[in-house]
Length: 119
Image (cartoon, rainbow, N blue to C red; front, side, top):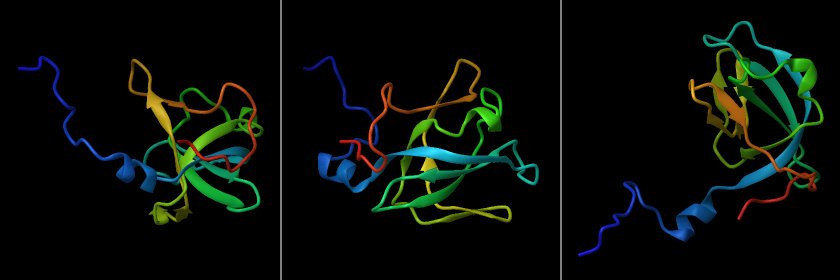
């Protein structure tokens, strides 16, 4: 009998490959005061194949709009667009919760070409 167990919701590697996670550079960040929860409106450049995409991100605790342009982030680019209030979010910008549950963005530690895929 094994003492380790598989995590609930286990998926196959093929399922993982269906999620298209790419790196992009934030080119614009604006306040989104109309959002129910504090958020920013981001425009992210994913390079030639994907181009510019918009995202709503609840990252106001650790980040300021003026500091975000130029920062590389990871995002899921193949979910359908989602209406967030009056804003259409085209990609899901990825982050992890800190000790208080506030979002910390995920991105490469060194600059990489926009549009690179996570494998």
